[in-house]
Image (cartoon, rainbow over all chains, first blue to last red; front, side, top):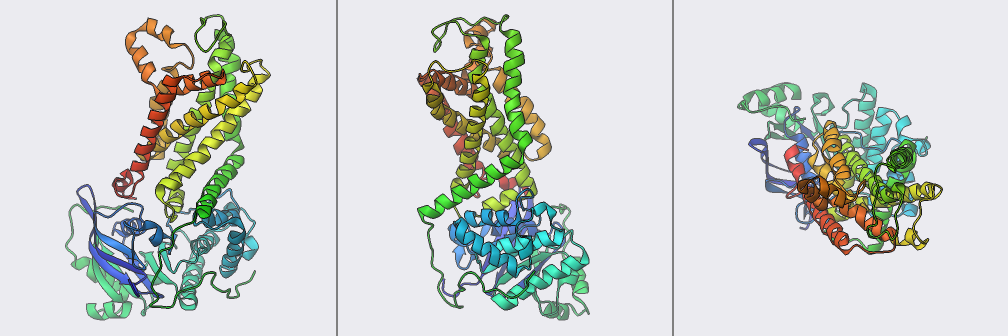
Length: 254
Length: 290
C-alpha cells in the first residue's frame, strides 16, 4: 500500500443489463497530478464516476483511492476523496456557509471546526464575502467555486470533477479551470477532470480518452497527438474515435 | 474579497507515506447525525407551505369530514374506548397516522428529487456507512413528523379532542416514533423504486389512497367485515391499520400487542428492503445508470 497512487482503476467493467457501459478500463493517477478524462456523452464517464464514488459497485474490476478499495473500505476511500458532481448539488435555500457546514458534518467535522474550515476554504476560492448569502443568489460560476470549496473542505488529496464547466459561460469556464490548475500546482492535489470539451486541454496535460466504454488512449496530450500523427488533440480525438469499431447498440447515456 | 493563498487545512502526507486507516469516533457519528437532522430542520423551516399543508390537511378532515359524518357513522363501544365516542374522537388517531403517512411520502418525494438533482449523491459520498446515513435521514424525517402530529393535537385540543388523561400525550410518543419509522422506511423504499419524479403521482394513487381508505382510520374494521371478507383481510393486513391502532391504543394509555408486533415487523421489513435498495453492491441504483 506504500506510495499507492491517488487513484487506481483496474480492469473496470460495468454493464447495465446487456449494454456495456465500461469495458476493461485501467489507469492510475499519481499523487499531485492533473488528468483529463475526455469522452463524448455516453462514453462511460458518468458510469466511471459512479463507480469511483462508490454509488454502486462495479460488475468487474476494482477502484482504489490511495490504496483503499472503494468496494471493501468505502469509508477510508471516500474520506480521502473530494467530488464535484455535474449536477448542481448545493441546497439553494441554505446559505453558502450552511451548505459547507452540512458537508463538514457528513465528514464528522463539528460546527466550530467546520466554520473555521468553511472560512478558509471560501477564502481560497475567493468567495469569502459571499459566505452568508443564500446559494440561490450566486451565479453559476460562483456556485461551482463553492462546490469546489465544499469538496476540498475535509482536505482530501484527490479531487474528482464531473464536467464542471457545463452550462457556464466562457469567462466562468476559464476561471474554474485556472482555479483548479492552481490548486494542483500550489497544494499538490491530484485532480481527475472530466470533460467533452477539447479546448480545456493543454499540451502537457495527461489525457485519458474514453469512447463507448473503452479506453482508447492514455498519455500526455502531446504524446497522443504525436502517436496519431496529427496536429492537434482535437484531430487526434477524432482519429481515435473514428478508428474504434462502431457498436450498433451504442446509445447516449449522459 | 481576497484571493490570497491560504494554508491548506489538513496536513498532506509526504509522498511515500503509508496511509493509515482511521475509524470514526462515536462523537463524529453524533456530529454527522446532528448535521443531517439540522439540514432537514432548516429545509423544513424554509418550506413553510409544507408545514401549513401538513397541519391543514388533517384539520380539514376533522372539521368538515368528521363533522359531516358524525351522524351517519355510529361507532359502537370497542376497545380502547369505554364509552360511545364522537366520530371526531374516533378518527383522530387515523389523522395522526395520516400526517405521518404524508410526511413519509413527502420524504420519499424529496429523496427522488434529491437524487435527480444530485443532492443525494452529496449524502452518499460521505465516508460514513450508508446504513448510518440513511438511518439518520430517516430519524430526521420521523422527528419532523412527530412535531407535526403534536401541532395537530394542540389544535384538536381546542376542539375538545383529548386523551382521557394528559398522560396520553406522553404514552402516544413511542407509538408515533414507531409508526413514523415504519412509514418513513416505506417512503425510503419507494424512493429507491421510483425512477423519476413524474412517477410520483402513481404513488399517490397506489400507495397513499389505498393505505388510508382500506384501514381502520375512518371506520372500525368490524364495519368493513360486514361489507365483505376480502376487503376485511386486506385492511387487517394493511400496515397503516396497525399504525393507526397502535396510536389509538397508546393515546388511551393502552398497548395493542398485535399492532405493536405488526408495526415492528413491517418497519423492519421496509427498512431492510430500503437499505438493500441503496446498498452499492446489490442496489437498484445500479440499473439506472446513475
